[in-house]
Image (cartoon, rainbow, N blue to C red; front, side, top):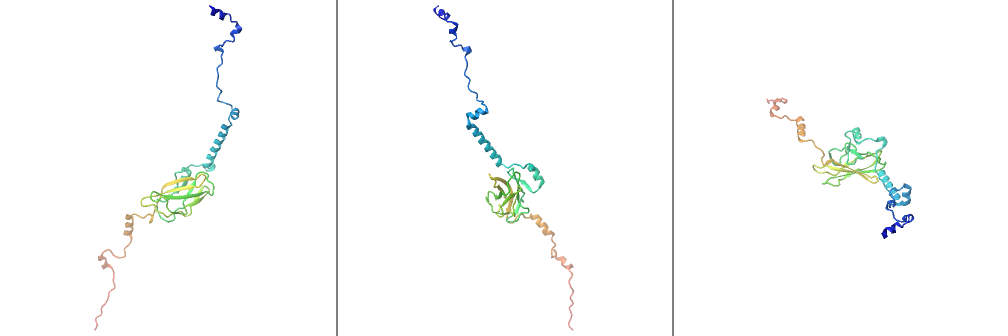
Amino acid sequence: MASNSLFSSVTPCQQNFFWDPSTSRRFSPPSSSLQPGKMSEVSPVVVAQQQQQQQQQQQQEAAVPRLRPHDNRTMVEIIADHPAELVRTDSPNFLCSVLPSHWRCNKTLPVAFKVVALGEVPDGTVVTVMAGNDENYSAELRNASAVMKNQVARFNDLRFVGRSGRGKSFTLTITVLTNPPQVAPYHRAIKVTVDGPREPKRHRQKLDDSKPSLFPERLSDLGGIPHPSMRVGVPP
């Protein structure tokens, strides 16, 4: 009874000082979605990092050559315009001339070797060619460098001096000295030997049989050959 009398004696004004859980305010954490203006004011380091990432992305895009707008053709279309002249490399940005499957060492190629760039490569860029395989990792070449002009590098009298070995071919490594350099391998490009390609034995035998012989094949044909008659005079 004493406790009831104690609470009943509290006036309405005094009840306002007691804690009411229904009217209490909960703590809410600050929102992570800040406005752009406030974000830059709060953390300028984040803005600097974003600017640095944008600059790096622009530099990477500038380093990779793009197709020219006025010559935005596919690789298949370019090869179709030059049938039996150009071939793909392992790089999607470069084509090169088709080499003969077998050739004699230190002999001029039937067609001048050239490298065609599908992207923008500055004029004056040096292009080099190396040849090798598991038997001859760095074969000797002559005139193995050229300069890019109008997206084409023409090699003046490229010659393969080193031999690839019996039954083996060279793999060409085309290096375009841009910044950074670009490499375009050309696998199983050419086989180089001392004698070069030779005709098969059967074909050579047919050619030998078709040649006319200077002498008759049978001795019986000798009787048909006319010979001058000789008169032997008896002395008186």
